Image (tube, rainbow, N blue to C red; front, side):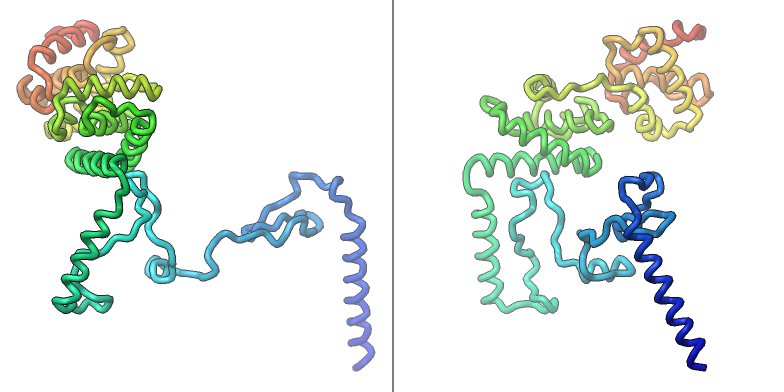
Amino acid sequence: MTRPTRQREDRTRWQGEEEEDAEEDVDLDDLDPEDLVRTADGELIHEETGLIIEEEQIDPGPEWRAFNHQERQEKSRVGAPTTQTMHDKGLTTTIDWKDKDAYGRSISSRKRSQMHRLRKWQERIRTKDAGERNLQFALSEVDRMASALGVPRSVREVASVIYRRALDEDLIRGRSIEGVATAALYAACRKEGIPRSLEEISEVSRVERKEIGRTYRYISQELGLEMKPVDPKKYVPRFCSELDLSEEVQAKANEIIETTAEKGLLSGKSPTGYAAAAIYAASLLCNEKKTQREVADVAQVTEVTIRNRYQEQIEAMGIHS
């Protein structure tokens, strides 16, 4: 019984020695890069021989494991990510407005007055100079207007970055903070492909439409934002949704815009007016008639604009009204 066991041990040892010799004989320069495989653990392995080329990779992840979202939240020891939408990028301490302790119990009146005092001083020391107070006010304005317009968070981030750049380049001197903040938000909407017309922007702003347009052109030129013309098709889904029109009308309006734009009709025209006219034409063609007044109210253009663009579009399409 002892001999076969020893033979097996000898055979295993010989096989191990042969594998070691084989590993020593492998020249790394002769290996085909296509045969190298990177594992999930970060090791680089030669597929044919099983030779490990690279190991002991640094794992940048946490040392703990979590199997669901709740565990991940409980074990995480980091705070919220930094954001450009706050003047301090969200890195300062925030004292909660609720007068409760860590267990959710109400605190005494003495502690409440102390927390009120701390909260007040915390707000005061968050901004160290006029420049930071300027930035804090401007970014709060951007956040307020973005909420009123219902645009996603990415637009707020881009608008905040544009405003910071304008502040660094000293473009705000001689202009109102609200004007530059509104222009930055308008530029961000165009950058992110979620355009809002100047009329819509001016409705939520405390600045007149003319000043927004003038400030936008100035910062766009000075910062080299390189804005592409707005595609009228970007407005079609939103306008159709507000007018309660079907997808058939939406598709027809997009088709009208594409066909007429190829013939050069879009050049120099307002994209909102062009989209509104296409929607009006499509609603007639699909027997879901909407009046020019209804479409004009949603698109915030005049009925005259819709009539003019509509006539141009149906002539280019070869349709007789």
